[in-house]
Length: 226
Ligand SMILES: [Zn+2]
Image (cartoon, rainbow, N blue to C red; front, top):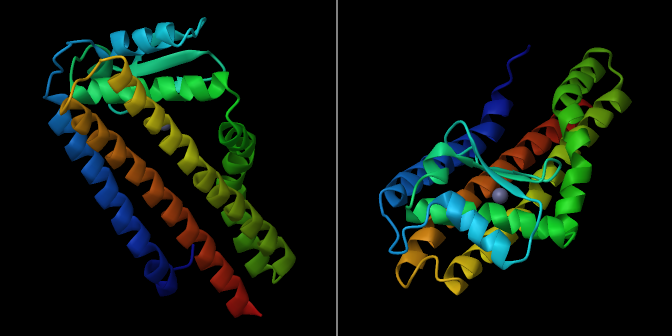
């Protein structure tokens, strides 16, 4: 690989923002992991309650290893909650469990951004590997058409992270409404849940920003080659 100081100039702000966002989400998560809710429902119970009250059938709620590994798997129809969420009665657990149920509801309703995001997944998997290779090969062979094809993959990755934003924001919006509406959290407790989900949302913004800088760097690199 070659070293380019311009790359650092482009990527350092993105890297710093990403690290800051990750640090913030961890801090907020730890803080509200220690605050139990009045209702005392575990993350698993929160998810099961929301799903049954919303009349969703055939979606399992199961534990998964790791920290902050919580997700909804639309293929397996499973809400997977990390150990720290699944068995915890904290405000953070309620927020995260409800957020994953937000994704279930998006799936049930055929939420359009979720579908667009799913369509982009193969391009992203292929693109993050093939993109850099095409650009480097294009530059070495002095065949810029190939390099621009690589840019297209980076653009797909960026688009994926942009489409992720409404999907995540919408899941959190639904989550906050449901935990309040069903009395899972009460009064001030809702603010804790909001803080956790807002911190998580910011990591998605940081990731999208990082992907944008990456794209801009390569565009800048190729334009400089002409
Ligand atoms: Zn999510």
